[in-house]
Length: 338
Image (cartoon, rainbow, N blue to C red):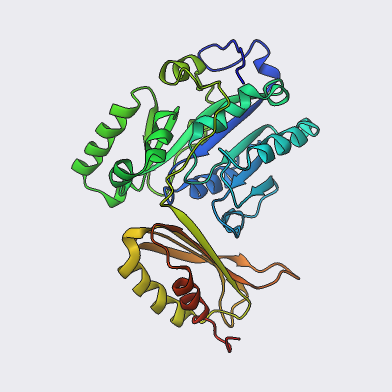
């Protein structure tokens, strides 16, 4: 299905001032999208945003990694927002329109395997969504440490850069000046128009991210003449996700020993690892995250009253051995394993 849309340089229609601005936050697995989202939600900017989070996996974890906030957060998991759950996106946005006065904008954080083009396409081909929203910008977070490898083995990584209006070149502290220059050169070969911001831990003024009026439909159509055709999107079949959940508390020493060996041995195939853990003897939730062999973790606040203290972990990568990963995670429990 094709749609005819008139657009100025910013993607606004003639009634753009009355439309809800939408920011699509994308980037490959582990680039730092959730870190940037947390900065947006934590900063005192005087605006309220409805947040839509999409995950690639059976169990939702990203929603727990988002800071506690007054914003409305919607989670879509077990599918990619650019394909299988696109209908959910239209439904959620449609529901938000009924409470237009409750927020100033919408932020969509896509899964790391999403091509942003079909996501952006939604705001033009669906009449109900198009009549009420304005695609403000596609913001792509790029991992300066791993992006060159991802560009060689993942067309999604290239698509995310190609369609970006704003690029947050993150983790610049993990590369040398020459490596950073090489990365920027590669990015510019793909997209010569996007504004590039160099960051560590996605730290930059929110004014450089939101309300940019940067989405240019004419430029997108120049690159992708079929952009407004409602076609299916396909992923690399070799990237899969497995997720596990246990009820017994986790022994931190067992977990650290297991995950350390696992990342050292299988790190190249583990594009993204993330989990919310209930440590034995601690009332706080522990968030664990890793990209290949680089791991990080910290406590992110107490468990909510009445909330089941189950530990969840998600692996996204290649050549994942589900039984082996399950046994390893279950062996980290502090109590007896059933």
